[in-house]
Length: 390
Image (cartoon, rainbow, N blue to C red; front, side):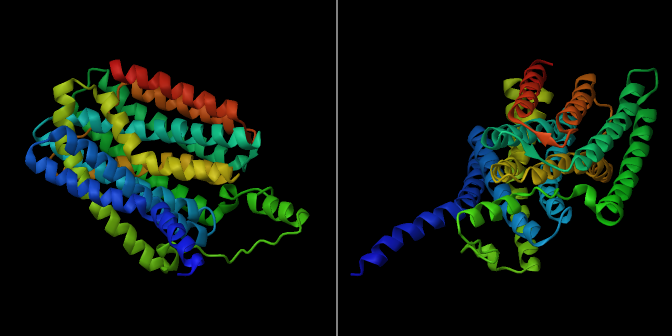
């Protein structure tokens, strides 16, 4: 037998495991979770559903990343953020449907909306900046990107403050519900304008500056008398698909994720009641499950010195999480006969505004280091502790 083929087989197996472990684990975990759910093993079903959702969401992010590499910024990062936010909306909506039997679940969903931004801006951005800072000491990005996104998020946080303030006054639920609908409409209109701003009039605000990773890599290889093949392709099966094919794959995976989300919602709500988990902590767990794939993508980008992509993903996902998730969930709740209002509690609104301020200060100069990443992680730990006991 040829010794080269003997060596090649283990290597091929290694690459198959590296490329497709998430799909295999995701599908197996969700199928097993459904079986456990029907067998009455709620805790195991919830854990397996969470693993399956996170694993398949990682596959979604990898397929979306292939699409993003074929598109210019900001379209590339938008594909990543939209695919993640769709998963988030599905997860929150299926949990919201449990409010028919357990009205307190509405508070968990509201906690999940705010927590998605908290996790994006502190865990995702914090970890990526921290790890990237350790490897490269300092990394540069387009400061116009962070300036624009933090302005959008600050204004959005102020908009969400309106129903929250009215809930502390003598106004009844009817007024708060009416105000919530108006604010949702304003947020949607605001996003349409932002989308035009991003894709038509000010695309340069969301693109990398001249000191990009590719330029540095080319310079380094030139110094070492090596060449870089920009057309090199991997054996990853989705690389061979065209854009339409990859979009179809994403929608199929999201459909499977929805099955896992149903198990996660049904059994997860029962577990939260049984163990007395607060709405804030439950919302945080939901957000971490939904955002995990983006975190891996951002860390990989930071390690490749693509900090511009990290900023686009973290802040872009946060903007979409509020400006699209809130109006869509409100509309879905109305159609499902569920009373969802935007009267977030003081902790949620306060944490959102402090997160935006921290992100503004840590990115305003157009460069980041590991200390700024550590500051975001420290803030998240403090928020998580308060959310657990609030």
